Length: 548
Image: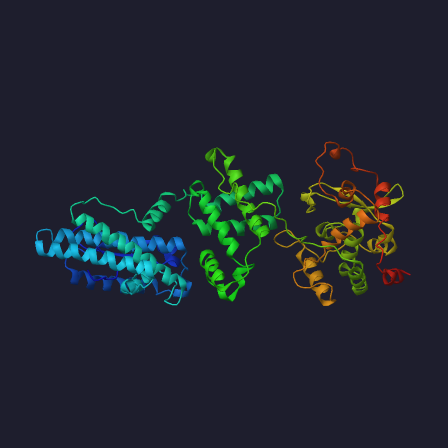
């Protein structure tokens, strides 16, 4: 039967129906995903005319929304569309025709022969990609679904191939039914995948994205995860959900699904979404094209990092009564014995000298880098400092690094600590700078929406490039001062890593670490350690002279 747009031979109904899918971008407004109603006729010509009339009426009501607002289909959407139109609708139409010619032996024989021909024709199209046989139906299906694809897009070819496979399955099933097995169905892979996806659809409030938000709330309230950490995780989890199906139930995702995502990540080049060659493609299509083009592949370290943002979601869910006993599909999938390069390498002496000679005369542009250099404090810890956090205790000057979320003060380890003001920092005029300040030392710096002091970090990276110290994505930045201090404490102060950890404020799991006001060593002892860092090979002359 010739394809008539929006005509639906509804199963178990002799009259013909109108059915049109609401474009994706209008479904919230319309309130439903499809429009369907009886045309109250069995005459094909009359039904075709009515379909055109109602379609035009809906076009006017919907305002013919531009196609560039429509959704680009995922593989899951493509296969669902292909099965809906190519198998379900086509089989229903064939069943209707079979019933209509049941009393006409000649017509019934032609119907059976047509199914055999269709099965072979569409199977060939699906196997070879030569899909001209399904082209007549493509435009009507794309419009009905509101899909934003054209013949030049890879999704168009994917839909055509999937449609041919579904239509071949429909013709084979229709042939079996015509030969007397009226309850015959198909075991075609594409149909089974779509049916399995429908059966594994998440309940309201239990999609992967929704469960992540519940987990994120626990992470923020219980574990103290920062907004930046949660947002980074959200992006990765959403990409995983897009890959397996945004509406998939958490417990329907198998180790095979997880492994396919891992392998797809392996084929994707770094920052693949910004590549012109891969623009507009989903993860699978982008991976396939990147492989064809011979583009660089993802690092094993980064793939492990992305999986480590999804795997803990399963561990969290397994601890909830609703998901008790949930299996983690990522178990055993992480690449072993891989380790990335130091993301924040330390500065060498020449680089430090160049930085020191380039700093402005005053303000945060000068003092944030100098404090980070002389103490090894984290960027956020430096930027949040207040004048009264710098105090004298028993003759020694110290910096109180405060963790107090109620005051907007935070440390990574969620504990406060004291850091000595070294002879170097004191000699550079730090205490004089503090005396001139009230309240926050650097009121110009505010946390961004993710809770980070990105303004300071961004300016310093740009500054390093301007003075020729930084080269692209080499990892150098404000945090590199912390790695520099760690190395200098090991080499010049001859400290063990456990002692370096005390200076730098790394977390300590020992019970004794939680006792007392000053943890792990007196201020004088800590100052002795930090004063032993001489920064050999670094020329501080300009800064010392500035204070003279």
